[in-house]
Length: 229
Image 1 (cartoon, one colour):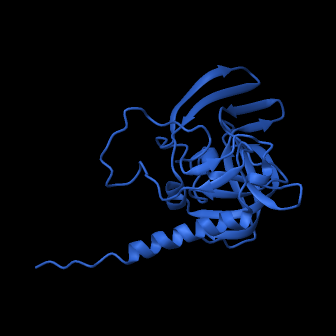
Image 2 (cartoon, rainbow, N blue to C red; image 1 turned 30 degrees about the vertical axis):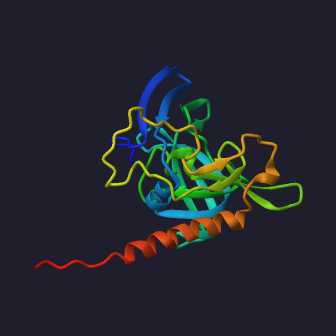
Image 3 (cartoon, rainbow, N blue to C red; image 1 turned 180 degrees about the horizontal axis):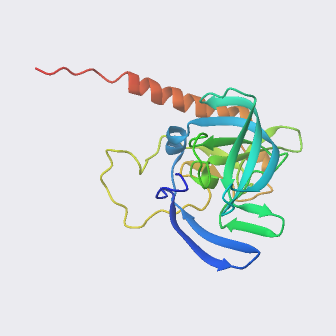
């Protein structure tokens, strides 16, 4: 979603507090599933955050935070440089800040796996589903790299063959709009943040994503051709 377009994920963006020092926006993000993350992300990679800097826009009407990642492994998409810089809305410059509720910025030194919707387009949050497309990588007490959610909850597994409310052939209308709590449908988690040893190993997590994308591509290419009479 672009800043100037109608938000797909944000149900509300209401200015709830303003002073000469800080503006605070509230946001509500729709829940998506893992298939949606894989389909909508143009770029998925494992990387490390190497820098973060907030700046005013050229017209001095807003603030953007520029976050640079050192790419370690591209899971989907292509990049022309080992480093990539992406823009997130909000941030603090001096004593002036623009804060967006629900926005979690990848921090310097963080390692993770990131699902970006479109690196070439300015968005409020370029991560697909906001926090739903943001996974952290941390080492357990034995040095094994494991995968956590944006909120540092251990990821146990991915049920990525489940239902997808965004499928074109799904004509049903849910009675209640599913808002995100930070984790995509199909991501199984352990609510105990201290249970690091239960989280998926990084390699298994990435291999699972790649296998799902390969299976989806093969299924799409195997559809029978039809000819008119």
